[in-house]
Each structure stands twice: as C-alpha cells, then as structure tokens.
Amino acid sequence: MDKTDDRFGFLDELQSRLLALLQQTPAADLQKNLKALLNQQFAKMDLVTRDEFDTQMQVLARTREKLEALERRLAQMESAASSPPSSNSPS
Image (cartoon, rainbow, N blue to C red):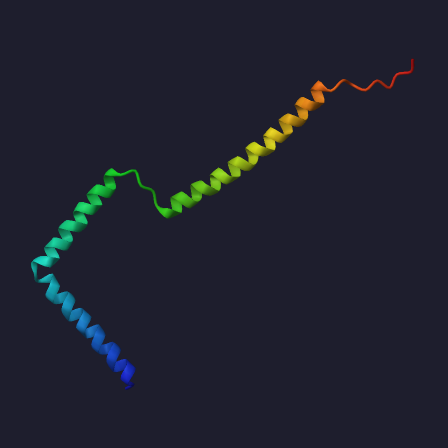
C-alpha cells in the first residue's frame, strides 16, 4: 500500500470518528436546531433557485427581443402610413 493511501485512509477514519463523536454531543442538537431555524426563515423569504432564476432570465431576454422586433415593425408601418403615396399617374 502507498503512503498516500495510508494518509487518506487515516484522514477518512479520523473524520468518521470525529463525526460520530460530535453526534453524541450537544453540538449535534445545536446543528439540527440551527438548520431547522434557517430552513424556517428561508421558507418565509420569497427565494427562487438558481435554475429558476436562469430560466426566467432567458424568458425575459427572448421577450425583450420580440418586443424590440415588434417596435421596429410598428415604426416601419407608421412611417409607411404617414408618407404620401407616390403618384405614377400621367398628368
């Protein structure tokens, strides 16, 4: 076995022992209570996930593009309606 494997094995074992020890102390209860309190406060806020935010940003960008295209089209139609028709009839 490699020295690196020994170190990682030792660190993994140390971590699992520390976690087991912490779960037997009041720190575990404190962690659970804090997590519950934070979840409760976050639930009261009007938060969205990053995925929902990104999706809405894409929808907004597409809507903005369509609006700009419609505004250009309307401006063209208004300018065509306000310009006098060219007369090609002979006098």
